[in-house]
Amino acid sequence: MTNSSRINTLILGSVLALMAGCSSSPDDQDLVIGNRSEQALYQDAKEKMKLGNFNAATTTLSALDSKYPFGPFSHQIQLDLIYSYYKSGKVPEAIATIDRFTRLNPNHSDVDYAIYMRGLTNMEADKNLFQELVGIDRSDRDPSKSRQAFEDFRRLIEKYPESKYAADAQKRMLHIKNRLAKYEISIARFYMRREAFVAAANRGRYVLEYYSDTSHVQEALEIMVECYDQLKLEELKNNAMKTLKLNYPNSSFIG
Image (cartoon, rainbow, N blue to C red):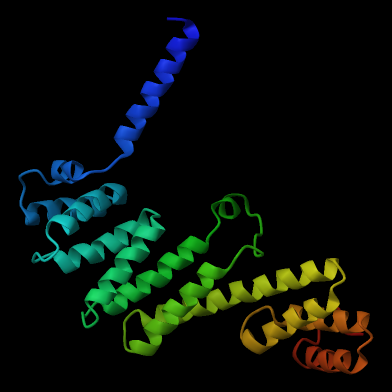
């Protein structure tokens, strides 16, 4: 066998071994469960969570959820599985588990928690690791997950206003609105660089209409003033300037 053939054989063997190791089957769950009782396995999963080993916890909890879907710990297992998926960054798995729990247990006392966790999970999905590490502003990235998180928290507050998670959800909604407003400002500035002043002004007006309680209103008004000036729309420019003067008298755009 030539050296090239040996190398190809080794590579093929490695790939097949990796595929075998990554595949999952009922046998894998049997290995996790073994001969231990549901209670013993659940305690083991709780200990893993306590130690912060959420990846390992999801393996045990998922196996338990499949093996004992109607056991005495089933609801709590699913709730802990949601949290463990969230903590280990497994967003699709967390969302799927949350949706299944709320669909099958609409009257459960912890449905508000599940909805709250859906909002947290979608917020986490919106984060950009590279931005967090090196401080790069990527406010122009797709905000669809933030919008979904906003809807999750809104649903929680509307359906369960007395929930212990409602106050925190309200604060997070304001944070998300700032994120969405910043996105609109970022897109407006993108349009301005390309001299698409109508589109840019519309983005600024959108911030005023839907995100008036955020920290980006001043920027929105300044964009509108500049764009209307470029478009020679004096009445619209003057109206925006009046609002800017009234609310932000220290703006560099005044005078």
